[in-house]
Length: 109
Image (tube, rainbow, N blue to C red; front, side, top):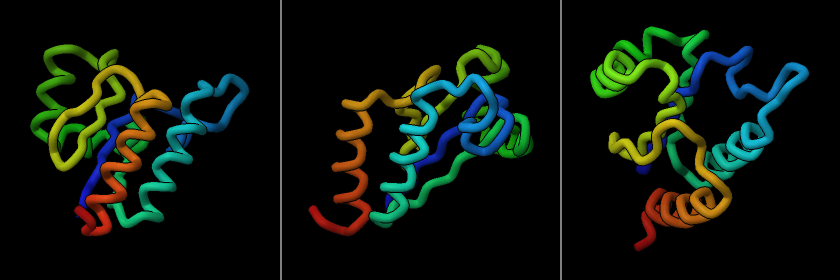
């Protein structure tokens, strides 16, 4: 099964889509992750303010944060490989990943 993990910066809630000043990419990312889950991809998302221990328990994330600071968040991993740092995937990248991850997650070649 394919797996995507996102290490988010500190946000008020697990998706960041609450409050008066919502980053417009956050609802898009939340929808994208929901699509992946529906297609059999394992999705895990960690919020620095709510799950700080997850950041420390991952040696790669811990090292990046120690060397570069929290400004590099979000970090996006696919199957343990860092694929994006400092931003969320744009629409083109999400389409590419949705096709690739969903196809691989379902066992199709």
